Image 1 (tube, rainbow, N blue to C red):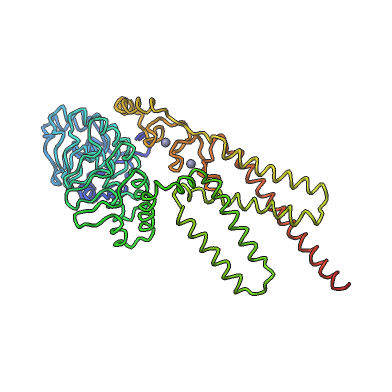
Image 2 (cartoon, rainbow, N blue to C red; image 1 turned 90 degrees about the vertical axis):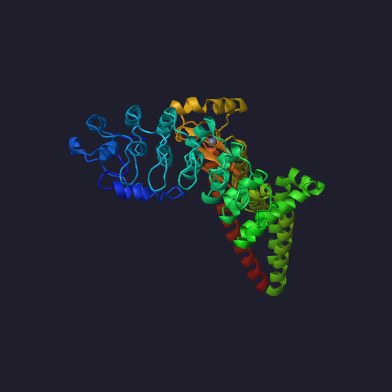
Length: 507
Ligand SMILES: [Zn+2]
Ligand SMILES: [Zn+2]
């Protein structure tokens, strides 16, 4: 972090006690009550400051002056916070070096949560300070008052670069905290969203570990917290849906208890899917899933259109037929609806719609004989639409893939990279464990960093990035044109029909 302008400091003297108290109530959801930025009073004369304020603002000269005058650096203030804590939480590297040289205890517990300076630095996400303190012998396995060790805090506060550094320093990814919970359990329970669960899974965290109190697995934790994203990742990683905790409850039982229909559906579905994995039918379906889903969507749209277009005047009949159709589609998607199948659904729907648009034009509009020019123009639009759709899907959007060798190399060099300041989240992706190019971001659907990523399009089932951006824009343009042509076709057709009906009436 750049401290040169608009410097923020945690807890100045007036606020010191308040801060120490607030720090005790830092939440695990990434919000931090203690973060009350204060502009550095530049005009303030630091020569009159007490040592706590001077430590917070990192005024080395003033601190030296006071220590030389006899201030004991090991002495905690009335909140039981030491100078090293204040220097650590404000990322004052030079001060930490000075205090340690003067005999400050690196792993001193302090504050309401009885945490070490290392814990404070981790909560604030100061990787340089974490490296610095570790060099001076700070022990990452010390637990704070809530039982969290260094790695657990890094995960809870979602500082994944720090977590990667601590693991490279030898902290076990499945090391339990004082309550017997692994970092993965905490991530699944307390952090809503795919990260840091995904990060831990990639670092080989165990999905079958159980805590010592309730014997809950990470999946139990995710279900209890209603954390759908984390549950999804854990299931993909092979977490068991039948594991029982100390009360004999499986994750499915817990999903019923927390009244989450989505989780119940997800877990029962996975269980069925796992039972059926051997079935030949399902294997065939997954091999031809793109084609089969396109057929299903096309058939559904066609049937719905045919029902609505029926000669019968009875809306009751049409309504019941539509309900039957919905029932059949529902049955089929329940039977074969794997997650891969579902992720393709929007793309198949779009393609089926385009198919029926073309059919409508050829079967209903063409016989009415629009001029050859119009026909040629429509054919051009339709070709453009299909061509640019395929180009968008087929072109690599700019995926930045590190090879397995590169990943291994990075894995071995995390310490070197961290110490060189290269684990900055802006230039390093902790999901891919590789350096990411400028303006790229990580896509969790594609599980890769994509150069100049715009978004992940569900309609093409791929990312829109640097290389396929223009094709996507052209696809949208032709889609709009096709829509306009269809509208034109409808209006013309309707008019012709009315004319014929009137004509017929007269004759
Ligand atoms: Zn990435
Ligand atoms: Zn994507």
